[in-house]
Length: 358
Image 1 (cartoon, rainbow, N blue to C red):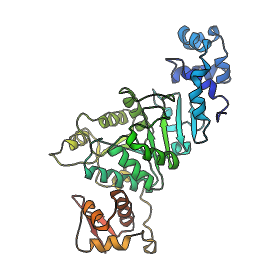
Image 2: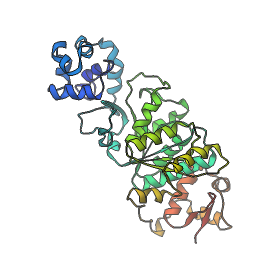
Image 3: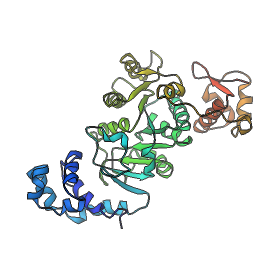
């Protein structure tokens, strides 16, 4: 059985082409519930949504077409959140093109928390990936759930950093939630479903299509208090997300880079257009009126801190040098560096180097 008893009727409405949020709202205002909408005659529905949509609703759909969605919803970790639900994200309600329903895999409660989007290039540099992870981990530790699009590159690094912090991460995708795109992020998607959430407005069974991703981007920015662009070329889809964020009244942040790098040009354009230049996670937190959590006491030093500090005793090092000397993956090192920064033991220097403070 599906988790919600009215799932069949919501999926029936979803199958009616062109019935968007406004149509659903008018119908819900006039009828006691979604079941009564689906059982109404075309004559009763037409004054609210017009003749074509009214006929489509009244005609119903083949129940077999709804079965994949019902089967998916039968799993306890899968959810359908509709416009009238208390769990519908408040950040989305004021958007003119907010979806009438959302599919969620994982814990829907994450959607009620303050969020910060991190986006950028699929073909990111090693430094860009490190920055995305480190910023995401710091912001997550400070209580901001990290939102991104589950793409390769910056998106995936941002999710990894968010999962390493207290506030986890949410992915908004351009497919049905019965599939993972790109397939290389399957393991990451499983981690997000287990410790955060994955969100889509697309029906179960929907394959990836080019036009789905700009639609996904408006939800990434719409769910968030602001959007951080880490690396982006001038034609990057991340600039679309940044533009949408500005139109939605969200803050836009960008990390500057080398004037010689094509992946810095998108960020530099955003900064010229008024995006806030950031060099640390605290720049974002201050703009949003939030603070980093207090540093942990010295007795709570993170695992491996002694080796990390000893390695830095000889002078500042880049993260890839540190990872090589310590025998760590970049992901594990990013978490340890974040903890050491928050303890006041290390600091990041210009150029991305890390130095020991004591």
